[in-house]
Amino acid sequence: VLRINPKNTDALFYLVQAYESKGLYGAAIKKYEEIIRLDPEDAETYYHLGLAYLTQGERKKAKEIYPKLKVFDPGFAEKLKRLTSFNE
Image (cartoon, rainbow, N blue to C red):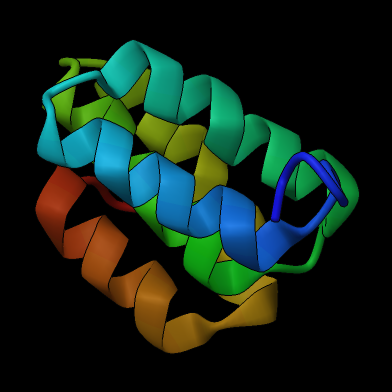
């Protein structure tokens, strides 16, 4: 699918999940960021990007996602907030 349409965000998301299942979080983060550039209101991708940052020990970057995520999906925002243990 990505050979035909490299901007297919659904296919990119599945690719990212495959990267994560292999422990390739750096590659996953880059692809999550690419998906967000293509679809800047994709709450699920923001949430999973935050989780990937946390897995890599990048708590500050995960916290930076929260304000955007809160606008797009307050439920995902609260989950991320609980996982990062921070206050607004």
